[in-house]
Image (tube, rainbow, N blue to C red):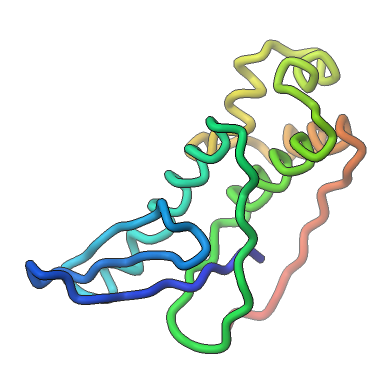
Length: 141
């Protein structure tokens, strides 16, 4: 599970600013801590989409012991893992489309963190890059 530490700080206008030590490009705000935390996953996903557009590595979360944190949705985590595997193996979107016998826009959707891809599509994409998608069910914290 990708869980990122969040720093909450009162801004000069009275709102709460949310930032991430591991992802300096991600910021959001809220009227209170709850709202800032609720908006935080979207800020992380937006930053990660920029990383992917720039073909940059996705930063892994640092170990932390206390304080607020944000866990990314499982679908987002799977898509980031696929992107990371493709990057490590230097597999382009075009290469993946050929391996999956599909059109490049379908691969774009697979990697789009806002698109609700199907699990079977992700499984096929992982298989195409020599990986296997596995689920782990944990007790809720």
